[in-house]
Image (cartoon, rainbow, N blue to C red; front, side, top):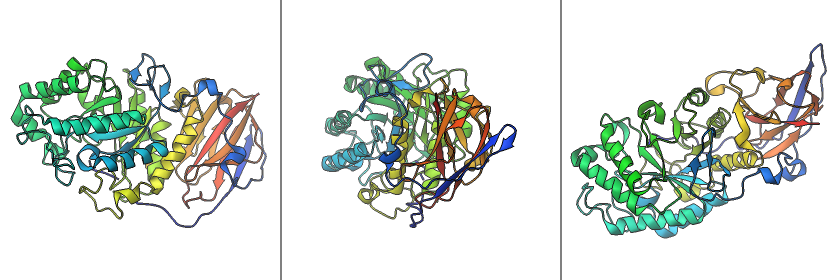
Length: 475
């Protein structure tokens, strides 16, 4: 739980003028720009037919299908993991506050939450919950589960299911370095037999909870893999249909430490560096396992701005990820005592700039058949103006060549080869990721027989330089 960004950006709201510079394959044509639309609905996206788009809520359980790079629900609809980090939700909050949190996140478009079933440090009365109930009747004795504690956990998980949330549930968070933040030392002391029995207990208890994806580990690549494996296998005995992934140490993915484990069906990446690098690497792995961005910088941590939050999310999604998880301090611990000081309460943080950015990201992707996107790994579409590291622009094109998305973390001129789209014409629009509105580009639509240079002229509505470019084929 080493978490992420600064709470907001520059206060000035500047609406910018865009320009597109068409570079013909033999001559240069320069066009004037258009001002940003005053209302999102004025030039809203015409992106996909209703029949192609997923419904408003999933039908659980989710599944991994052969050949798919994303999860699907029980009806076969693609499921975009669009998550929020709520590690201490079960241990820290009263039922009233649980509902406040869930209803807020659902209203903002989140459909996934990352939660610890057990807290060791990051709750006010850890490991006890808000009602004073510890998870075990004897301290750290996994063979003495406290029914009252787990009844409250059941209640939280049911309320999440009713609201359409996938819960990424960590059964026994290990903690950085296997230390006091988590339960690894207690797991070693309890031993293998108790860990398997604990897993069986969870499998039996939650076999009918179809909205759970189990997340094993937690900020650590344990030398005793067998202890974690025993929990996973125990859960599988009682709930064989449940999905599983693992949360490793920073800068590692689930497949990096747990490759070959039969219970591992979903991969993920965890990095505080440029997200596109591990994302592209895991997209190219021979296992072709769906993966998502499980963790990166959190809001109000590591000095990250709202632009960094957007960059890591877009770099993941346009580099092959099946979703991404957003985090905020103090929401992840709900004022229970985090690692970094928080400038606001968790209730105040619900309306953060980062959360707004995630809503705009979700709205953009859900208006598209996002599951058709494939990363532009060989830079055939985005040929120039890429940048490097955290400043790397990323692009993805649909497999049917009907549309493409390009994310620019900062101001620059980029060159696109429009021949990579079906055409014969391509419309181009800028999308402001800080406030969710489109703007026209002068000269659009463009012929697909040319290279095309684009540059956003100015900052977005929040005063940052990041923009998204949407390209759509037209007959």
